[in-house]
Image 1 (cartoon, one colour):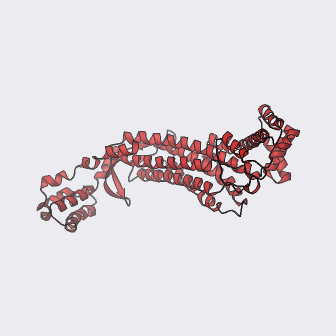
Image 2 (image 1 turned 120 degrees about the horizontal axis):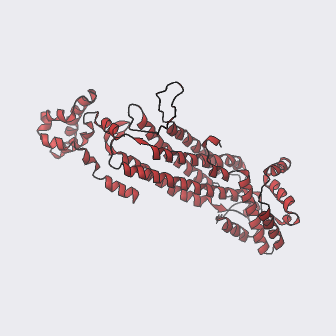
Image 3 (image 1 turned 90 degrees about the horizontal axis):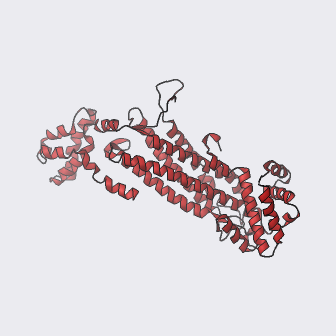
Length: 436
């Protein structure tokens, strides 16, 4: 985790103290249920909860000092609690194994991280929708292969982004449900020394589902799906960021990131206004996606369990969620403050002498009796003259002087084919689909 790209709420989920608090809750809830089942004394559960109520501080340094000797983090934590609570603590962790605590804790952390990310997505969706409505009918050029194609609106560009992030949200809801499971099944997952009722109780207290078959560890296909979902969200972030970066290029300049008073774009060139935020988002997306392959490789563990996944998850759990949280918030700010230049959009759209209307002429000629190949050839031979003149010529004017074209279409008919508004007649339909 790099503090530069981290926000407090998400970072706090991964702090050692937060982790140990979840560990204690798992152990105390399990002890409580064991007491209800008559396996351990009720006084043992009461002693844990009484101590917890009066001693909320977690001494991370003390636990670390014990672990330096034991070389085992869960044992170090249990020893520290036992020293603090006293004799009754001997009933803690009855029939459980370390993975019960570690895996269930990771489930809690990832579920809580998901809640933050879902709130981030909601904020981003709201920002995109506001700007999409604002520019619903702002004409701009659509590009395929980076080349002028046909007119769209800037609102439609943003509506596409909204629909994509709405899908991301749906996927994250599903990934959260899949990752939020509890395993308290003991060694090799057989419940030999801990009743399944304990798992059910702990799961209920922590807001988790029970893991049907844990084999001592929660199956890592769940985690793989979760991190893959984060990777897809990161890719969607990069897609919108890349679009903004292209639109900010000097020769395009149809939109740009907000440039605040006192901001400087270059240490050498005072004139520069660079798309630094969206470039940063492109890089952060790569970091989030870098967690996907290790998560996939964690699925194949040896037999009932090994810990080859453990070191990986200590990295990717915090790093992926903290980075994505920051990236979503940054993108929301970019969208909210994005500076849009409708006049430049119109200028760029018109700079190629009306070539953007070529398809309408093609279709009109086919409807006037020519084959598609003949129609294509007539339009293309005029379009290439405009292209080679870099827009200095007008496609409409050339078509009006082409006898093969005018033999099929009148000047009035040709002029009607160059109507910009024609391309936007279904914008309301698309918006209704996206924002229903």
